Length: 203
Image 1 (tube, rainbow, N blue to C red):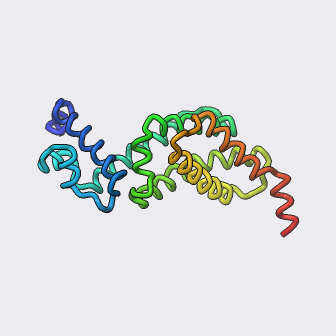
Image 2 (image 1 turned 90 degrees about the vertical axis):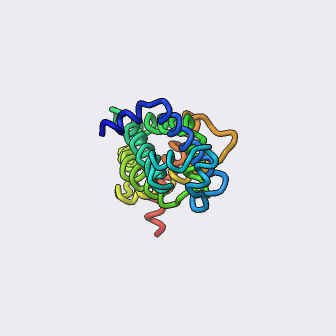
Image 3 (image 1 turned 135 degrees about the vertical axis):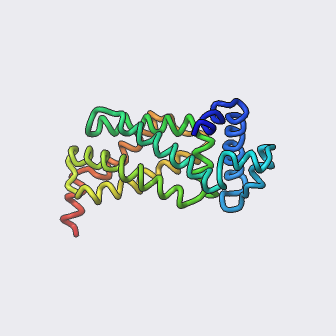
């Protein structure tokens, strides 16, 4: 434990950590997670294999590190908001998209077509559904929707994740405030009580 702590405080260790992670992200965007190897990472990073193994067991372990960090960061943002209802949803959404924008290169690589879909699905389940969508669903229920909470949360999870991916791919992206406004408008329009009632009557 002490040796590990000393390594983490060592400038060379920190520099190697940074170059490994940045090389990994670049390679996912270039060749894809499935195709890249540890050899590719150390070659791009200009380090030895031994240096890589001081930090990670393999590429899957490296991806797990990003997964844990992103999950923890998103959960912290969601849980930091003290308000409730749609006001909380708006604040959370702005903060989440600010976080995505601040880390856009990493987000584009990890949530792109060449990344690991298992990683993406776990983030979707652990954060978008288990945390964010349930808060959003509760806010919409307060707005007046009669759709059962579990269905509403599931719908929001899929819609939000899809909107996030669309936003992520754009070169000229909306600001966090602008995309939040779009998301809120889409969700509230889709779940407007009169529409839900009309669909129910027609069926």
